[in-house]
Amino acid sequence: GKMKFLYYFTHSFPQSSSERLLLHTELKSKYNMDKKHAMLIEAITEYDKGDPKRIHHLLKVHNLAATIGVMEGLDSETQDILESAAILHDIGIHLSEKKYGSSNGKYQEIEGPDEAKRVLEQQGGFTQKEIDRICFLIGHHHTYNKIDGPDYQILVEADFLVNLYEDQCSAHAIEAAGKNIFKTQTGLRLLRDMYAQNAYHELTKGGRKSEH
Image (cartoon, rainbow, N blue to C red; front, side, top):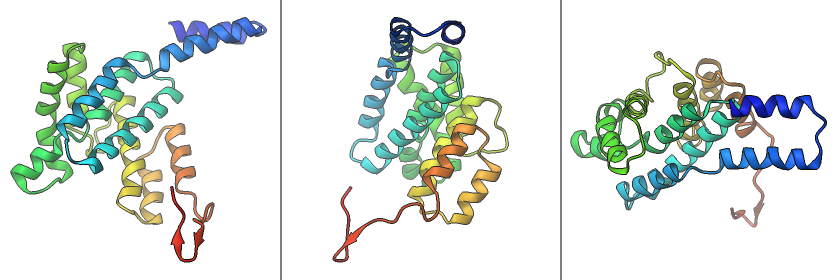
């Protein structure tokens, strides 16, 4: 409701500086990181203790999922579910490695939901309906033929954006993902820009790679 009002408000009247400031304040308060998500990031970092690779992965997926969700205009409840699921999407990895000696996506989907449920209930602030949906997304984030909503679609896109780089996928795999997986305009733009061929060549000096 509020965002719809803001849309009409900013598109129906000439924008004075005070009107622009009001809009900026409203948007800023809406899209600042939720305390709930910050706490969840702390919780999963503790859960994945000593595994910075996996922690960095989930932080990237969360940030991209949040970006796509905001740019695609998700309602706040769906955005909240999406971000929570993105933070916890790989929670089943350590248990999968322990039980099956593998971090395969299918094992993650089996082990992830119960672990996520425990973390979400322990933290509090989530309704049963939210917990159910977050756990459903975690249990399906490697299943691409059952996508049933924007939260699911965007989680998959965000995970792909990161995995295509981390797994050093070929240009062919990137193109296939764009055709077969990506649906949102924002996700497609990010994919195109992130993996643009020949747009950037890393500088090398004396055979050494430039620093980050």
